[in-house]
Image (cartoon, rainbow, N blue to C red; front, side, top):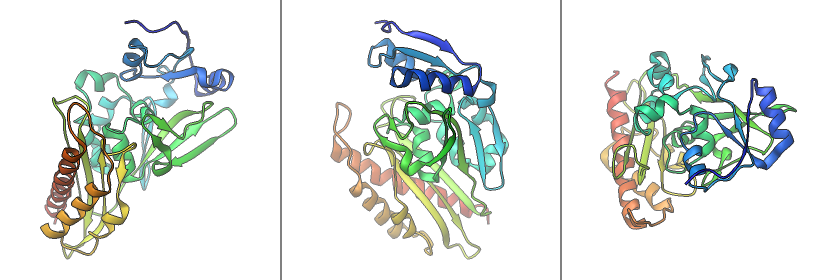
Length: 292
């Protein structure tokens, strides 16, 4: 199939992009890398009246290191982030997740902001954003506002972005603890396919080997990527013994609400979720422990 007819405009600045969004509203779809939107348009699952291309806006392509966070412009290529050694040291979970995103070819074209705004509950980057508590900076003609990940993802391919707003940057918290480990994994029919279930974890250890900070979550297990801050808090103060890890992972799976499809039943997804959550927590623990 081919895309339904649409008008095309290329913005030269974030201000120009916001003016188009302000004028055309819900009729506009924003495209940068196009790795998700263009196939959906080709299948006529999405039929925008206007296609707003922000790919040439240089101000949206950057990686900036702040004291407590790494700021990444919405149009920064996934491959650029994947190869950035300093960024990987500051936000290791992001690089680990990117290794599971599509293939090299799609990461060369796909953008960090595009994956976040697309908000597929099975996608890797939205899950990392939710687990780490990333902040999204949204720009309109009037002002900019910052939305926490917990409030940003509102449903399958739905976000808190208003029709007149464009994602400007994503702020990824950088943990300062020396003994920090992270891990990401997923199960799919083939590498690069949409994940049936994905899991991510990051935790820090104190000098005595006890957990002092923890975060983990699951993808593909609900209407949005899921994080479990209350369950993660149960890990704090422990030595991450197998019993507590398995208990927390089991409870996370039980709190999830996956659907069934041709690839897996809801019951099987819950089983996978419990296994994968325990696996990434243990892997993150091992990595943090190796920094002793």
